[in-house]
Length: 217
Image (cartoon, rainbow, N blue to C red; front, side, top):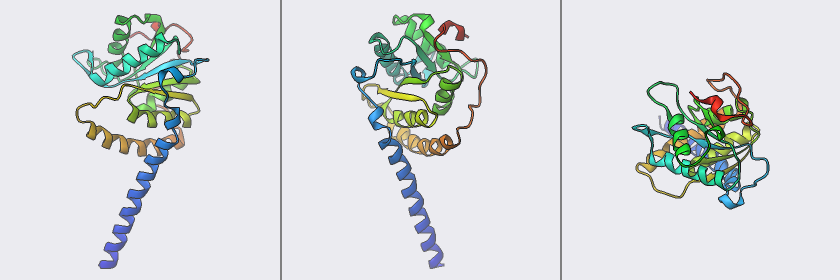
């Protein structure tokens, strides 16, 4: 019995170390791609990809609003003249992407420069669809820094040249819970990215070089 317990303890420790190493590898292999706005290359960036987050009463949450504000700064600085907002709009009564687009329009971004990905149900799906549905090859991803490591890793594994710009360093409520979920999500997407599975949702192709209003819904 003691021998079995020792084996279980060793295997548990080995698993814990392996999971920590995966997280560390994902962070250290992408951290140099997280840049301040003024250092992002301005040549041939297909779009600014703003990843979705929760909405409340048809308004962006504080976390999502910070992403949108950063995306607006990038657009206005000339990094790219196309923005792709990607979030969950798989149900009629929950629509992240129209909330995001409306916020951008209210802050001076032309509607035709904003593409909506209605099926960005996860970071992997958003980035996979950015490549396969919107035909992007070179993007700037906007989200909070802790989330950028995984997003950039996925993009790299899918063959997209990508850079990340983090929102301002703000402490959001329940951030410790998000950090735990992100730790686990990195492990999930580390293995998922190896096989390059298709997004759950595919559909019609919209070239990012076209008119964003074609994705209105």
